[in-house]
Length: 410
Image (cartoon, rainbow, N blue to C red; front, side):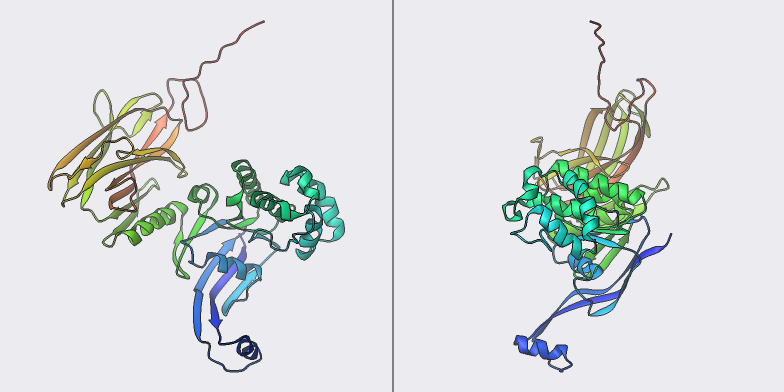
């Protein structure tokens, strides 16, 4: 596979001067010191291969959008180089390149021309753009009357009217409705399958796990972690909790089956043992049968005096999608002031109404309804198991519905 995007030691510094005249003079070589400087990105380096989908994640102000603007050429780096092999199509900001008084159709011609398309090409693509945007009669009305969702539809339809070598998307899809988000991500997947590279900025971590081959975590303008989606996303979740809990530590390791185990917390209380058991025999289960009665047994130890203790549970499939989750805060089983040294025993009984595949349970021992307030311990994929179907007709999906098909002949 060839490299389509190479970002090498890129730094972007925004300087503030006492006046615009001083800024202007600096453009022509005057050595006037700025009053202040802000480093939006510092020595950023990464590559994107052909057909690879890469996500940039991080908290607000981490430098994600600055990187995308430099890649697309709307902002120039202060230092470093960026090289692109192929045609880029980008959706960075709602309405970027659009005129509020022009209709959707007129804006397609104007913004499309700025993207390098000829009038004839845009005329040929117009029916497909109008069809994909699905904004009806608004297509020929001024975009000042558009909602943010309609603007996103128009921008995405134009940007993806022709498959690019590199598609860049910056959060713009988050303003659309769920139907259009699904439709848009389906098109992105098609482009990826056809060889396009994707560079995506989003706070939708479920989309990151499902779509991306790699994730880059940015923090304060630097690359903090670059790796597999599960590893980086789990680390990011732990990092967010770390900012809310002063004494938090984070551990990560991958087992021989490829599942990543991330453990974080203050460990004032923790799950000493987590087992998946057959509900009748109470024997450990590594492979469950569809419909089998199971128990997830969690033993928690309390090491310090705590005001409250809550156990949280999450079940995810192999791609990281959440299948189910809850905690004892929501089930109104909060433990008040558990004794130091106390050992607590939780049994979670359930029927394995899952589709064939691999699944992982995550546990959280916290002090409230979220681990961001008091994260005593969070463990991703602490118990991993397979599900096989040996008793029911063949079906697909992650849920085993107890569906009955009735045929009525007239």
